[in-house]
Length: 178
Length: 100
Image (cartoon, rainbow over all chains, first blue to last red; front, side, top):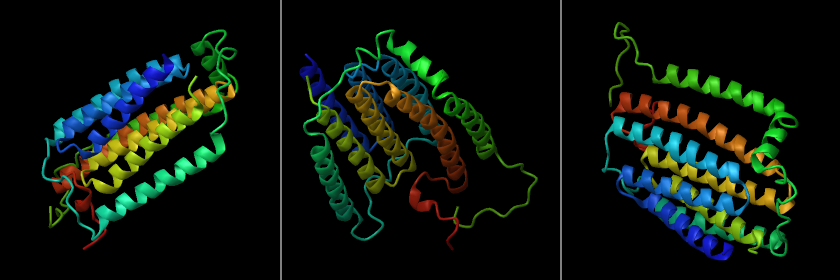
């Protein structure tokens, strides 16, 4: 059972990721990324991370992708870009580097983990996955958790400052090649 | 049961696809989505390690990555919108304010 679900979801996630980076239409890319997030949520369930699977669907596929689609609609769908090459040999070099990266990652992961097996989370999840995570967050990881709240406030204020329109009274010259 | 290596290999492949997207695409939004894909691949690695070691610490780390990614998306998209207002384009090739 786990094998079948894993095979389906891994193929689905790789296909949706490839479709995401090659899609000519930005909205199609965003939808492919949503599909990718859903396959990852299923993989989290397989890995006994039930709370994270829910968070993945709610925060990533929900909030973050809605924000992405909102900005895509705000800027208008742009089809000009595609795969135009501006730096000489960029495309072939990109493929060579990524192939090397895959090879390197596979070699290191394979040599380090080819014989390890899962311990399983039966014991850690005994009182429930969410309860266990909450206990860790509010004891051992309390300080990082509070710092995260600060980070979210700074990000919200920063986004407002960056996204604010300049007042029209300012006589700053517009960029010449705008 | 599937070995952890299968999950780790899948995460590595997804991460590499994200890197490829950053290197190939010129649309800032797609580059940004590729970065999200890479963050998710790392999350999958964290969750796999959590199950491999039998503790929940990896899942807590993945939770923090999700929170930081949410903050990063908000600021990044604001920057892209500000850049679009200035240049009428979301292409990373047009972001060269330091160059004349």
